[in-house]
Image 1 (cartoon, rainbow, N blue to C red):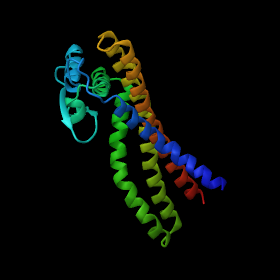
Image 2 (cartoon, rainbow, N blue to C red):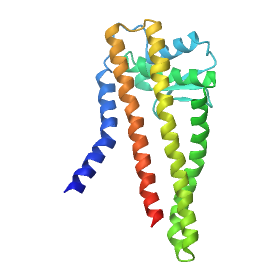
Image 3 (cartoon, one colour):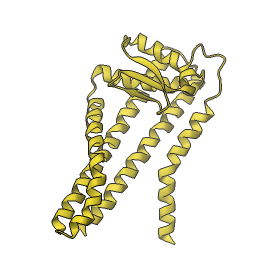
Image 4 (cartoon, one colour):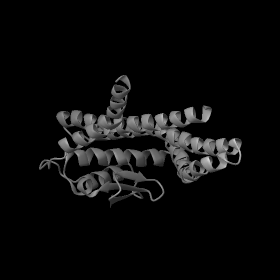
Length: 225
């Protein structure tokens, strides 16, 4: 019974942040007649103010993000075209990443480098996991080396998750909120709501880091047998 309760609590811990952030984003996605522009227009305005005229603002169907290789802030259609608090706040957050890139901030650069390494290792990890039981028939040592390769790939992915959290927090609270406050784009009530939107979004990365750590721990236990 205790094991069942522990599993249920773990599942709740992993899924609740994502459900919460979706609820918060939907809650503040109502059309605002008092807003002078859309999320896309806000992103363009903030980039121009920061003299980042070479950074593009584009629509995407792959989730809101900043692409450092293309130097583009990409927003989903509802945020690019929407006059909503969620659209404006998310646009400011992604501009925050563009500012991190332009300043060459160390944590941002580190995350980008590790993300590229993790992408390559993630392609190798499934092959290593498939080979591990086959190699066990040849020699246990080779099987363990294959598992070790897969675990190293998972560790790099976990490290990316852990570094992503402070990078996201800085883009939100070190970049986006000050830009919104200093530009006086939102009144006091909306600033409080903007804070809650960004705080909720940060928890999705907490959940991602926890899930990644649990996955590595599970395989490390297997390797020690």
